[in-house]
Image (tube, rainbow, N blue to C red):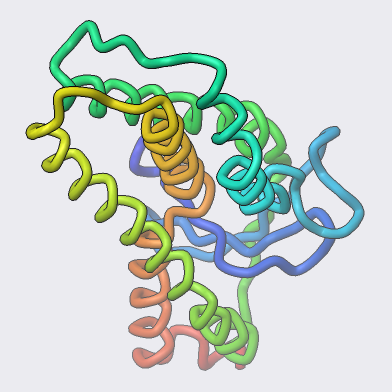
Length: 202
């Protein structure tokens, strides 16, 4: 995993292959460039643009199709099966993030940001609420089902696939975007702005 000094989060996309990131260890903004085959000219990486398509197609088409093809045969108590399936989805999300997002990161450019630029970045924080609530709903829904699974004697294949997808999408969102870390970054930026850190560049 990344060390603290490498813990960074994206805050604002500024080009087809560039985004403004924030380093949570140094409390500094920088420009992150992206390279490689997974960067589209439209301005988003393929993994970012397809996350929600995967979830929608999976829920409407893939889940019912796969559910008919196999039955889950529990070899552990159901609640442990639920934990194991979620963990498998979480692990795949980590791997996919490493392969498609982290591997696409190129050069970092440190620059002095102007006050108006920081204000523009902070305006983008309104888009963060949707990501935060999505992750909260996913994790909350999984927690409720996990507790409920203690009472179950069987686990349907459809529910098993849904649990896997929730683990996968939550993990992918956490490691590629991390809305909770983003919220922390925005709080730090607001404090820096209030303290006048960017006044000299404004």
